[in-house]
Image: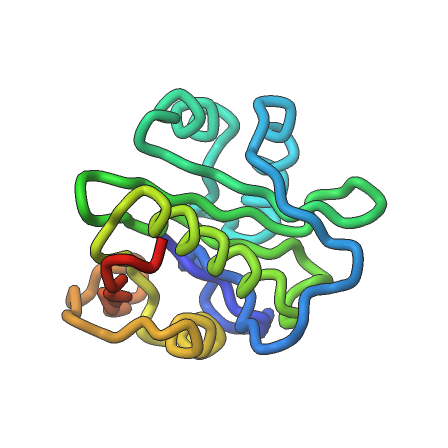
Length: 179
């Protein structure tokens, strides 16, 4: 999992691009990812993550892993994709694979809306915890995850390359009976 910040000068090899905190734009809706979205997601990946972008082939692989993977897109009133997020569920633990907001829409609550939906889906599948990795230097993503109740549980030193940036492993415990 990687995260992007709203600061265009910040490193962009981390997959969460919205600090949240604001209400999502009016008319924004969520739906499951469809195969017809994959070309656009690959384009957005290039815009958001450059060298670390998932290709259209990678997206096809992710969609093929549907039994364990759960992807959602945020759709603007004009039909464009405003953001996307993904989850991998294995037993009693879910991993956030990605949270990203399209350029121009960052910092408006879309990322929080997507993250909340991932957590809701994880709870519905009976998980005990939701995990994610985030660049230690990505303040916007940290605000998003901290605000959603995630806590740092470990550090993966020099995980993001190039740049030798640490990854923070974060966890949200999900009490039983919340589904």
